[in-house]
Length: 364
Image 1: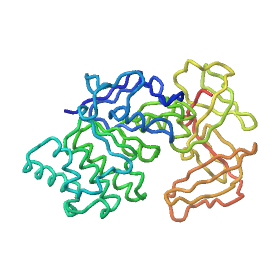
Image 2: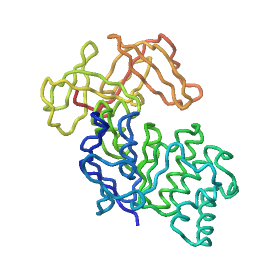
Image 3: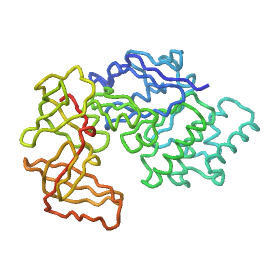
Image 4: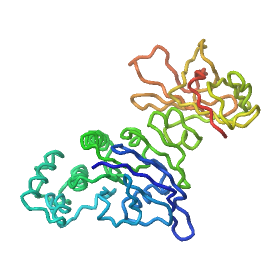
């Protein structure tokens, strides 16, 4: 049975240092949920509390309607895949995957049937008698996943399970994880500090800051397109942050940025913290900015600048532009053509444009 996870005012400290303070979180049943945050923010501690590997100082953990806060590990029906996979080096692939079934004293014939079925599903049946040291990183990861899900847990915890893999294999395994979760319908809780991984796999995600507080919860698109704080805007993806004062909030808001200009902002609903003259921050994603060496009409906002550097990324090109007030703005331009009509080079004078709808207004 797949069940939800609820954290109610969960608190954990080590000595006098708080790690997590009154964390509240609801993870729906059957979700692929990601916890994203910088190293040391308490993500893994949160996972270990859910799994029963550590005890909280206060608060409660619910699996469905059951309070499991003080329940021992083996009674939670929650499994975990660690960053280093934690395979038993002295057991071969079959015995590693079968381990939990053996502990439960399931008949040998049933164990063999279940293990062979799951090894075929993970395409590692050819390595059934190999030991962990004889496997590649991707094969070890598949064995660890197979071992974790063979006894059909209510929740599967994944603690940066792809960190040891190279980029190409990591991309491949991310797709396999999505397909696996979709097939099993098990609640997955995926911990990572890699925004690419979180944006790729998650149905919903929570962003944790350096203090262990949850800054925002939402779909990957909501988090990326509409961050609620400067921290989220900077941590998830790349963005340009401009600081200024809010003007004209009764109609279309305008933000006056010192030494750079006034910029229109789309804000259909007035936020509680907004007032005339308050300090605000603007978040503008680099891919939302249009760059040109000639003036262009029909854009809400414009600045000029000089090309400081150019970085070719394959799919896109990154331009770092120095504005007249000496700040650096980043622009990503999609490489749609082999031979673009307008070639932009170092030291070129350029215009940067963006629409007011592509600006996110943040409380400073």
